[in-house]
Image (cartoon, rainbow, N blue to C red; front, side):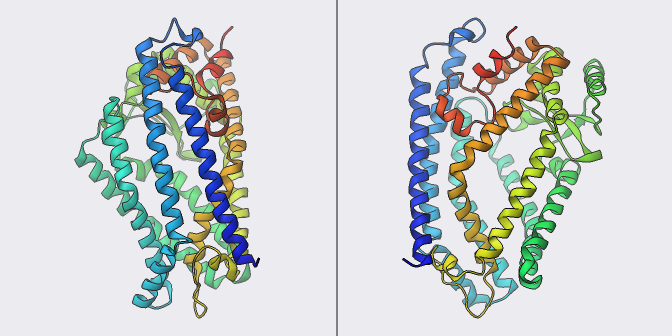
Length: 418
């Protein structure tokens, strides 16, 4: 069996194995949540109403079942792009139209993104206007959804096309170590986006106003000073314009960091609980979780670019994934797309390791928050957020270990109990 055939077999095996494992895990989650739907766990019996518990179960099961449909469709699309020749046909058609060169390669990336976005649209619409609407979370109108789609498309093209052109140019002009130069540029652009996102990009989609509750502002400022944290500002975002879900987050990098509260969060939590949630986020910075994740992203992306640099020069990489490379021209856009489609299939099987690391970081941030505020306030805040977001209190343990980036409520609250 030659390398091309080996890659075809490995790709098909990874696709099938991933599909089987994901179906098995989702089925476990659906059964486990449904089995526990009619009984609130004893530890939450005094704080969570049965109706809220049942809503969370129904929401979780509905999303999981819909996810199975998305899973099958996504696997079919991936197979269509690769082994069934979809990407090859698109590439050949654009070569006939534009001829080889930068224009054709950018057109290939653009058309691939456009087709992928169109294929995803029905699922996005159903998720927003059927599932989220049914459970009372969606606040978006169709006009707002269309405006968001238009803005994100224009913004994606305005940023993505120049970046893609630069990457493609480096792949062709920077020699055998183009992947190292490309990685450096890619990381610099990611860091730049961390700086400009809060000020220039996020306001295109939401309104941000300074926190005007003076008492809460004083509490939050005192907490941040106590924790040795400085931010450019405290802002309230009109999250209720799109969703009833509540959240708070830090955004930005370096001097551009800012604290953002959803208006829905401030409407649901007491000042003490807001303090506790913010202290949890500060815990991530105190333990340098953000820097560790950025460093991890740097290392993994460097390995990925190095692997792409090698694979892009191997004929079997293209033919093994259903594409005939252009032997008289460059195939850089093809290499990028094939790599981006193939890598998630194989990396899926190590994703539980990253989920476990993320859960450990959440426990560390919780512990820090309890040192700075109150474990009781943090636990009541989390319970409100779990209930408000209809997060199930009874997830399947194996599903949690595989997917959850945050520990389930029972594990988090158990550590907050005196």
